[in-house]
Structure formats: structure tokens, C-alpha cells
Image (cartoon, rainbow, N blue to C red; front, top):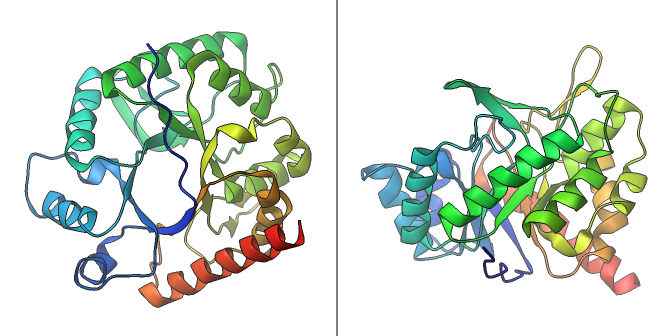
Length: 278
């Protein structure tokens, strides 16, 4: 079943986090959209849903999930999709996104984004799950590239896998630039070569975030400001994109809102400078 494509949004936004609820509700902030974690609001009522409803009165909202389990051989949970559809119908988001990963099996949720082997068998499973999810939600999905910490010996490259998935399912992309940098660094890959294989015309949203240095690898912690190498990678490919929604993502060590707005202003400045030079 085909679904209307998400209308491109050229703008800059932030994630909706608990410490900033009041500021988003009480004062108009200089953002073009807000991204909300879907699972935090997939409830019948109460304060979380009231907050999101009031935020939606001021800003366009994107819904971003962390446990759709789109890569699972168990298929996507039908009750999860029903609850997400109910939330989406109420909020009318600009789009719904989740991660190209699996999160559990046999009813167990690992609460982590587990890596997929980029094989034909995995592609068949993911494509079937994406079709089922899009039909249940009545809208196309945006899928985000995850950070990875191991590399499977067999299969196609990640970008080629993503490209074929878009072709087979009509899904779109949420491109996390930090995740590209983390995965490429961990596996000794060239992020620019990775991007050359990606269908950039399917990108509708960008995440910019920070990471941490683990013992042997970079770790996608999203608990620090966007570092210079991630800014540089973003600047190298932003001119190749059309209208796209760009977002600063912080999931831990949440700073005051003005610090995130300063980072967002830097993203705006980079985008303006790069496109003016082009």
C-alpha cells in the first residue's frame, strides 16, 4: 500500500525533554519544530499527553520511537502499532520515525538498539516489517541509521542496505550524523564514501549529537555537545541535501535550554554558510 510522502520541512528543532517542558509551553522558543520520544506519550491520558498536546499547539511535532523493533524476526508488535497510531492521529506529527535496528525477541525488550546483519535475508525481514508498520500507521516511516560497535563479515554495506530498503518500501530517512561518525570511526570506514552510497533524496530529518570515548570505541551516548568532527561531517554533505529538518539531540546530562539553542544557532550558521558558498 502506498502512502503520501512526508512534506519536506526546512527548519531547525530540538528534542522535547522533561526539564524544558515549561519553557516550550509558556514561551515561544526560536525553533521550527520539536521532536518527542513516542513511547513517553503512548498513554491514554495524564500529564505527559497533556504536555505534548499543549506543545503541539505551538510547534510542529515529529514523533521519534526507540522500540518499534523494526529489524526483529518476531515482526512488529501489533499492540505497539495501534497505540502509536492513536498517538499519531491525535498529534498529527510531521512524520513518525524509529531506528533501523532490533530491540528484542520473544517478548523481551533489551532497551538497546541492536545491530542488524546487512544481508538479503535481513533485508527481506525488515522490508516486510516496514510495510506492515506503514500500513498500520497509515503513513510512511523515517528510519534512522544506528551507531554500531561490531561489523558482520557477510552482507552488503549499510548505506546500500538502506538504499534498497527505501526502494522496496517507500520509507524515508532520518540521518544521524553523529551515528555515521561513530560507526565509521569504530570500523575504520570513510564516512564520505558511506554518504555517497546513500539515497540523499530520501532524507527528511537530521540528528546532530555528541558521543563519548569508550575503552576501545566511540560510544553513542548523546550526552555531550556536538563535537567538531561531527560539525565538519555535517558541513561536508549538507549542500547535497534538499529541504531537511535539522535537530540537536541530547538524551542525558540535559543542559539549560539556552545552551541547546546556541548549538542550534550554530547549525543554522553552518547551513547558511555552506549553501551560500555553493
